Structure formats: structure tokens, C-alpha cells
Amino acid sequence: EEKDEPGIPYPLDFPSKIPTNYGSVILFTGFKKNGKTAFLWQICSWLLSQGKSGFIASFEIDKKIAVSCLTRSGLGAAPKDKGELVFVMDRYLSNVMLYDKFGSVGWKALVESMKFCNAKYGTFFFVIDSLMKLNINMSQQSNDCMDFMNALCEFSMETGSHVFLVAH
Image 1: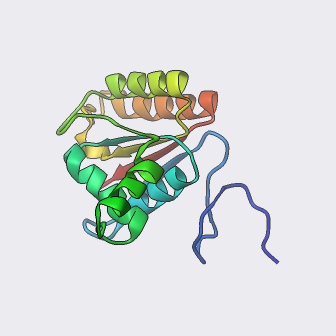
Image 2: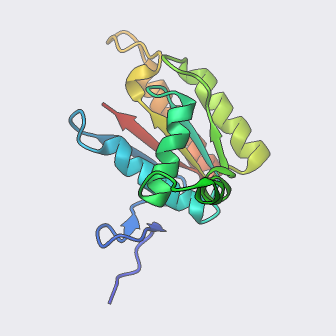
């Protein structure tokens, strides 16, 4: 018998639920090229297929590649024909907003955009890939990193949104 734990149900044997609570911030970390982003694309595709709306800020890949990644994650392969592509666009991409910025970005502007999307569109989940592309002063004299994490936690708790953060 499956234990009823808080989280978003996910159709995998393990984990059976993405370990989220109301207003959570989840950090994906690990070695380069070990599947953090690929796993996150799978989570995004599944949430989108469930009718949840998403905001994806991927600073390491172009928006066209992001759409391709979502499409492939949703289908498990490249679309075979135009009909399959239209199906995927409808099911997975009609509820997603892509933050159109490649390279580095200021974290305050990003958080403001997240707040806007949540207020205007009721966006349910937010992806930030990658922490290393945010203009955060990491010196010991700066509180930038702490301020950013506090802003994310406050945002997720105030809105009930889920934030997935990738740190390479």
C-alpha cells in the first residue's frame, strides 16, 4: 500500500511523487552531464500534460532548443509527423512561458518576471537553469546569494508555486 505523502504524483516507480510541498524550492545539483536537466525536462513535460502552467528560464540553451527538449520529453522521441507535433504543441506547450534570455541575467529581474507570470497567468511551476548564469555576487562581503534564495523561498511560499533550481 502506497503511503500518502505530500507531493506531485509522477508516473515513475521511484520516486512515486516529486517531493514537493505547498510552495517549495527544489535544488537539482550534481556533476556535469549526469541528467539533472534531462530529468527536469521530464518533470516539466509531465506537469504540462496535467494542465499545469510553467515558466522556464533556461539560460544555457536557446528557446528553440528548449521547445525541442519539451517536445522530445513529452513524446519520448522526435515527432514522427506534423499531426504528432501539433498534438505535442497543444498538450505540452500551450501552458508554458519561456523566459527569452540567453546568457546571464540579473536575479531581481527574474524574480519580478516570475511574480508577474504568477499574478497574471496563475503559473504553477518555475524552472531556473542554471544558478551559475544569474548575476549573483558570490563574494563573502555580499549577501546576494542569500537574498536571492530568500526571495525564491518567499515567492514560493506566498504563491504556493513550485520552483525548480538547477545548480551545475
